[in-house]
Length: 92
Image (tube, rainbow, N blue to C red; front, side, top):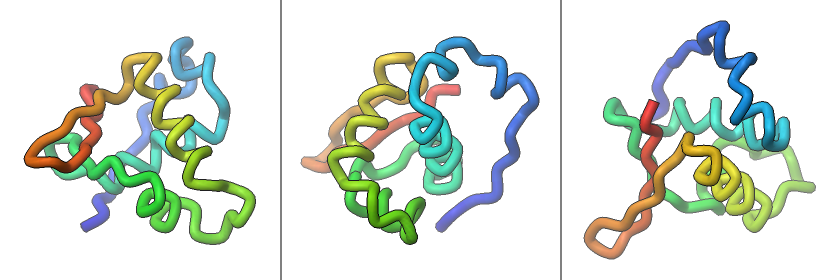
């Protein structure tokens, strides 16, 4: 179930996040709503696209996967598998 989360003011000054696409940063904020209380979400780009960008026909599943990869590269996501399913973890 989606959760209500808040954005702290220092989010906007994070240099690592500032190095990736604006849309990837928006995805990151959206993932906070999809994550459970431990910061874990299912790594399913098609489902994530449907939940966070339902009105954006120009965004493809591969684009979501790329943004997830960008967030992983800057250390804001960790991808892992458990019982044959892929998950993401938001460490902070």
